[in-house]
Image (cartoon, rainbow, N blue to C red):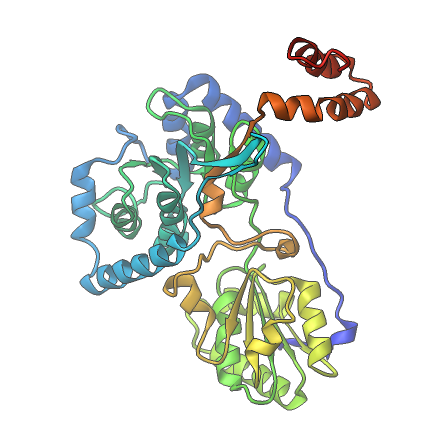
Length: 430
């Protein structure tokens, strides 16, 4: 079922989905209309796309309480423990402002401040992921963002109006401001504001192609996290690995999306064949079999490497979102990995451990962007401002060199801004 080939023959295909011309045109029209018409456009688009007529855009306290009555106690217990793990992990990412004072009176530094207001987009319907609420909101809170606003599409069923698991996750994470809107129109509202929703400084969170294109369109007016592609997993394994574990982990990503990518890289042909058999066996009774089967047929592969060195090289070329290393010495192999969003070490560190519970963020670079980008974290919700303070003596000592550099660039006014000070402050030769 899964394509099997020598690792050396594997051709990596990367495609960024920027949508069709029609999709882009639709997104531009929606965003521009929300900018002009505000809340009226939000209500009209919600009725058009979600088939729901809404009166109040904002989620009320009564709806939050109703949501708690619709979720199971074991879900709430697990959610709270996961939130504690995620918070503890991200607390270790906090950074402090700093200054560096020199004997000549020069002071330089970096002032670190949180963003003022952040918008979190949360998908609804069948793609409702309470875990993503925690992963987006908690790092922003740890960074010190004072205003976090969540938008999510209204559901077609449920007393709470929107998915109760999403509402409870947001409430547990500490979100105070929530709106029942989704799609490109929600992104537009966050970016530009309406009568009911004040604009934000940054938008984070996954969504469908229309949400992704809208985030791309409003970037510049606000910051965004990324344009995420379909999920990916690579498993690097040797003959010490259990084929049933590997097959289960490959399918855990394949069930997300027909465009998801699940790849095994191994030095053992025996393991490769055993994993292929396990994938076929485990698919048989998988609830999302149709999606997972199409994913492994179209985007799955088993790559047989000559040795671990070639296996590592292939992994670095793929730069996967998720990388599991199930070899005899996983830490040694991990030290040679240059490109991966998250690395899971050993047979018991299954990818879902990171998706839900361990603490590191599950919002990761996709489509090979782990070559140059990182998981969502506290830094994504901070801004840095540099500090410079020069004393008179420092300027007198260094002024001529500053003027030399300015004049070399042909910027005479820059040079004169220094020169006027040198002449007034006792260095007439400048």
